[in-house]
Length: 379
Image (cartoon, rainbow, N blue to C red):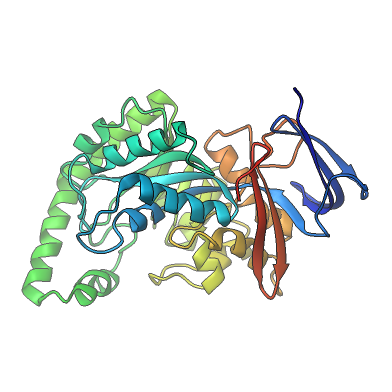
């Protein structure tokens, strides 16, 4: 039996324009877009309707699973809490980050991430989830045990994105010891001797393991059609290395030259939506707004604040250096979808999934009023 729904009197954000009109949904897909307001259907009262947001990089599930040091919440309950928050923020497809390899943050035992992935699959099969969940493996290539963790996921079809990262001092995100000292020594209250030993161990591990682990993981991903992301590229050499590995997503480049080179090479440059909302990076690196003004920002991620993913496009579309709202919305919908090969969603076009968000922008902060995934209201 055919099921149809009409949303009328809406400001519809298309790929390259905003039109006033109606959207017809039929059997979970977008069937028709009509300009002009119709008397039939749900009246949106002039609110925006945008594609469901696509989140490629969020560590937020960890915050629900481990809300305090040493505390582990029930996995299914943690997943549902995380899912409810992302869905109510307008996110209809989320790539949940699971960490591979024990880095300087440590904190998770062998097998915990595999248990989380199994719980995600079970929650989806039991119809507990509002958003579509896929997995992003964050691989700390300088960690001795990263391949052990990665091997637990070699047959998991939920894995659609893998990032290669190295957080050792002097690498990538922390090119200067001043940054690294603030982030690890000062915040953790380490003595000079303890910090020196901490750095020595991490640098030796990076020199010993990083290249071999990158080779193995990237080779597997290229063989199995899994999208690869670089992380914190800082130099042109880093970008060249990423291109050689088949990277399609450049996460959080830390310099303008690395971001520009990545963008010009056809990689999608990803930065944090909180960076846009705050107007600066929390770690002192390049501002995402600067990249947007140079036309080399492609994708936004909520990272650690789910609501920032729908807030940031509206921030970008305001002010002297504003870009258009459709361009900004594309950074959280169609471009991330295209980057990871999800060709069934990300835009409001006939034939695509009816993943849609009704949003009203008022007082400088968007209000998510309703969310649909494949035509079913989920928030």
